[in-house]
Structure formats: C-alpha cells, structure tokens
Length: 350
Image (cartoon, rainbow, N blue to C red):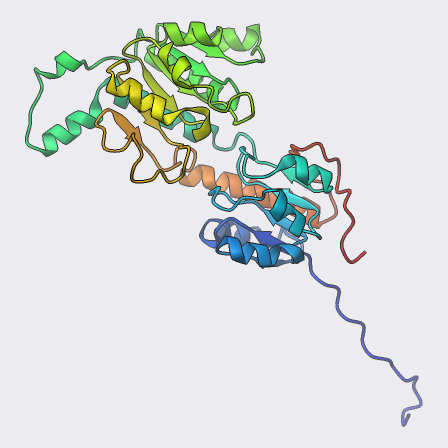
C-alpha cells in the first residue's frame, strides 16, 4: 500500500439491537417510551396493529411488551412463534391473556405490573356503589326526558351508603383500597372474602371482617368483585351464587368478565331480585349487540375503564418500561409471575 500501513479487512457488522415487540398500542406506549429513552438501552421497537401482524413479528422479538388493552393475547400457539423471546412484560396486573404455563415451559419469563391501578379501580367501585344506591342513572335519564320524579323516587328507593353492609370479594390491593375509601361513608359493616386472611392488624386498620362467601352474599347490600381470573374463580358468580345474594342487593364486577355469569345476572335483574349492577368487565369485550345487560336503566356499563385513568395508565406503562430497561441493561426482571428465575433462555444468536 502507498502509505506502507497494514491492509484492513472489511469492517465488522454492528451488533444487532435487541428487538422489543409491543402489543400495547403506540398511542398508549409512545409518550412514556419517549420520556424514558435515556433509561432504556438501545433497542428497536415494533408495534403490530393486528393478530396477523403479530404472528409475523413474533419470531424476531427478543422481548415483548404485552397488550395493555387485552386485545392481543399470547396463547400457546403465539408463544411457540416467539423463538427468540426471553421475557414478556405485561403492563397490567392481570395476565390471563398470556399462557403462563407454556411460557414457563419455553423458558420465557412473564412479569406483570401489580397495584398501579388500585386507586383508580377503587374510586370507580365506590362511584358505582353510589350511582346504584341512589338510582342516579335512571333519574338522569328522567330529567333528560322532561320528568321530575322527586316524590316518586322513594318508591324505588334512593339510599345512602352509610349504614349499609358492603361485601368485598377478593381482598388484594384493590379490595383493600376499596375498604379504605369506604371508611368516610360510615358503612354499617364491611365484610371481605379471600382465601388468604388479611390478618388482625389489617382488619382493624380497615374496619373489615372476614366472612365465608355465602355468608357475605346473604348479608351484603352491595357486593363488589375484585378476584383474579383462575380456574377456581371462573363463573364463581353463577346462577346459584347470584341466588344467594340478598334481595335488593347491587352487584359490581371490576374483576374479570368470566368471573360472573352475565345471563344469570340478567335473569336476576328481570326477576326483580337485584336492585342493579355495574360492570366494567365482560365475558366478551366489547359486549355484542345482543348482550342481555345493555339498555337497562339500573345497570351501569363501562368499557374496561375503571383502572384506566390517565394517571394509572401512565404509572403502569412507566413501571413496565422501567422493568424492561433493567433487563436491556443486563439485569433480571422484577414481578415475574410464572416461576421463571432470571432469563434462562439464551439469546437466539448466542
């Protein structure tokens, strides 16, 4: 060579960036992802828009951010396409849209995001209690239609939450947050059902009593569901359980739709056994036009929005991305729910 220097070979290719696949829509993920750019090690980001796009993208994903909306799930067939994936970060506490067992068999850690929406769900729950006890939705419609049923309202009842017995089914972070917010309304009793006792100190602090499920149903004016969806809780509130509810009770479901038999609930409402119901979650989301719960003045429906305040959404997405950031920088994921320690599956290109 003219300068007498050693001849150089071809430059080594730049190392491939980890590929992060987000099932959460860009509108939800984007703001926090941009804000945390300095925390996240360099990576590429792919956001599919439909199941077909997801199937094409999964084989190249090193890490997956689950769907905050629960629209795109990861069943066994999807997970088997994810040949490179080492961890899934679900930006909600619920993980029922992911096959946890198959992920564990494949060596894929699944981490969730517990507790960040407890305040939001608890506020919605207490709001729903008040709406149903005060028949607020029906009287709103009445005023809109030109009626003024101030005197007639007593016939169907306009009630206070104070002095009532409230039953909380499931006493995790959300159930306890509901109990804490009820204190200011001075309920008569607050009962809770959970397979795991809260303990004497928690019960004293929150003013609650542990009860059996049938006992709780029979005694409560208001029953609120806060259970995870598992084999044992699926259809827990079927026709038989609903028949055990106190006549004139109201039922609130902010857990998962499949915990409650919606047809059985509609039958109880038709029979006049229950005063009303509020649902933020459904067996089918969104519920179809033939849903037996639509079009009722004593039923409050919400599009899986109880835990989706702007503040809660930001907390969940930020915490999820911070967990991802730990892993991108060589750490282990936090809040793993499928028994996988560390990241046992080696990188695909290793």
